[in-house]
Image (cartoon, rainbow, N blue to C red; front, side, top):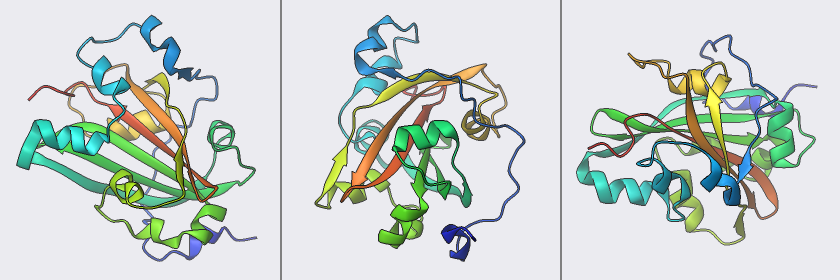
Length: 199
């Protein structure tokens, strides 16, 4: 059976890299975050509960920009399916960058299973709009607790986040959360680049 996401004409058909999701990555709950070693300047950004786009705007002002990088139909990994609590095998992947001036601070990826996309097709039409701000205006939205992990560059989403970086670190800190939109799940992942918070 053909994946439902294949029908979305605005989905990009760009060539993807060879990196694949690493199933052995251990995502940690918020209560374990204090035990993890990281740049102290990054920690407040990871643990903040406010909308990340609003926090970035407050720091960067008019220099803040959110841009759509890519959008495509793809297969869900075992890790994606476990986090989403779904048996769906395919979905829509949406990559965005949040920048301060010309510098990328955050790389974001949203994963929308096929069944969720059928119920909420507007999720494929966001363009450069911020998903978090769009969801904040809707009723029936439940966000789960954030989980945190250090993602090595061999991880597919990390490789995408660092695809244009002149200096590539060994990996990036990330957080993810499951969101239920009137019970239909989607997954957001945010990767924090080395320039984060450095105006």
